[in-house]
Length: 139
Length: 145
Image (cartoon, rainbow over all chains, first blue to last red; front, side, top):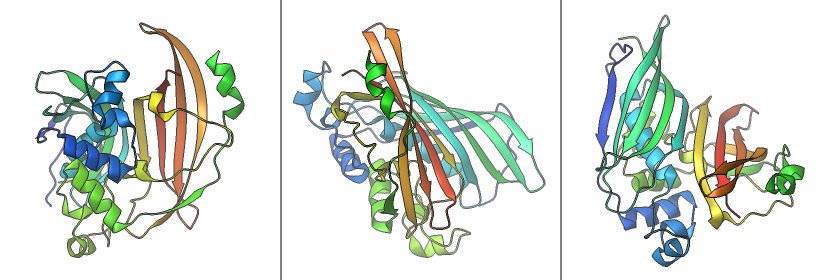
């Protein structure tokens, strides 16, 4: 995969994911081992004051992970990836992941980029906010 | 008040648990998050890359067993995930054996709009068979119990 030159201010994405489904939440529960019923059982979610099930925060983080690994290809490396969960994702929500490069450090063969990343719902509500550091070969 | 309850457990690493990064588990995880990246599922393609094998997506280490902090019992259902941070030193490849452990690094309380909230800061790490730290994680969870 040919790599490009990254510069501060460059946009990353967007990656628009298919709407989150209940089946996906069950699949994620199984694949991750996080069986908290708040993600799969409406009655339980209602008991703790929600309208119904909410997605695992880690599922939204995985979406943003895809935004990053899509640009890394097989030559890039992800060094650091940290997020804060700022909102709830519900079945039916369409999540868009995006980022912006903040700083780029040029080395001999690699360029290391620090970026902001975030995820929003179809209503524009920010549900995740974070930062990542990645390195890709110099273009 | 909660801080006092958790204080005796702060800083103690769990006994490392042996985990295997199985290619089937990686593929199922990639399916669940809807990520078609061939690095996570196509063995032949992955072999042709510098990784030499299928690798795991960046958040896959969350699926590992990190063991228990002796005596610390929590109602998982009452936890809200607030923040998550990963540091990657080496890729996780299908077939890798990782020794994973965790500790409660800190506990603090904050007055929020819903009353007093307790924040639990966990740290997790995975070591390979050569003793190298493959990844490090920090999780901030809000405890309402």
